[in-house]
Length: 465
Image (cartoon, rainbow, N blue to C red; front, side, top):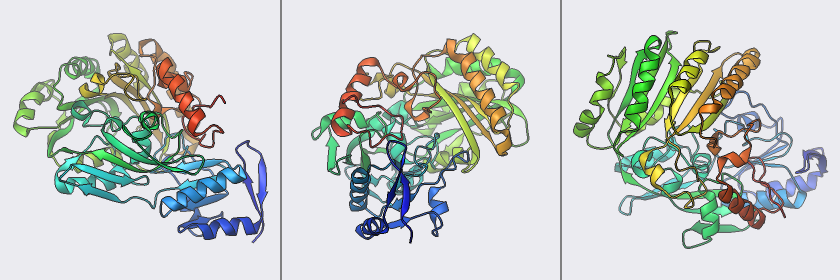
């Protein structure tokens, strides 16, 4: 085999001789892939079809030891590093161009203690894997709204989800985490051990190390009363006004989404999606005003296993479609904001694009802004501009529409952003994901745990040392 050309953290190329690469290969239990190897293209392929990058090396880790060896190899050779967990990163941070990709996707075991209502899951697991195991015991924790999403990225960025109204964010349910830091140490972070790191992991994204396992608090969940009510687009203004009033006067058991979308038949509609996590009988009473408003074109709300609810969004956003998203937090859904949404959606360029709101949740809003790195606790919604299309030649048109909508909606927004939707072309910059004092604390953590910015392919907090 020839020597290997690979990208460094500085963006330049270096050459690793064959003996060095083979030494790395023999040090890991998992596989080490190069371009042309069987399985290489599958390993570098991620959820967003717009991302087409080719790492020089992909190490598919079989366990924690492999992650430690990979981090040490990258640091010693000053290599550009990306970290793949569930690979749902919108911006494609999990796959790098020319560097070393540390792939945790083979590490997806989930161990459940039903008596203590605790689960420990490896960093490559997706919520589909997690929910399958914990729901066998009638348990769950806040885990996004799409079973295809990785547990790692969602939790490290905060973690909005259907259960957040009652149980808070995914990161609010995190009890501890095992982390491989930039110097190759394996640390456990919790409220009693490396508490500063634990604080930063709950909203600070992947800046401080590679989390190899997450321990979560579980709760009794299921079945849930959930689904969508769908209304004609012609009535979208009154539907969204109703959504505004309904979503701000609900008990903790409820969490909601309001959206403008196009049905598979090509009909533009306004929809309200909801999850009631509690007694089905009580849920029927609480959701009655929502189901009677209109009346809707369709009422798809029914008792469902929680896993069925989690699988619904995956069908709306399938893997390898082209995606470009913008998102910003919002405190109030004003009439002017609704008018702006309707104006833009009336000219939406793709039937796969969705615009709307994801509610943070009552319990989320009650957590103090300094308790975790996810600090925008006062926001009520994440306003989502979720553009998707099939033909790569349509990229420019769809991206332009999304950016223009993002500019037009700015006067009605909170000003902060949800870090899991951050992309490098965000006009606000990464500081908008945090309150000023929170960002200062995160920089201090970065200086302590990753002063050379080895973990830079993420919503990056740059060190100052």
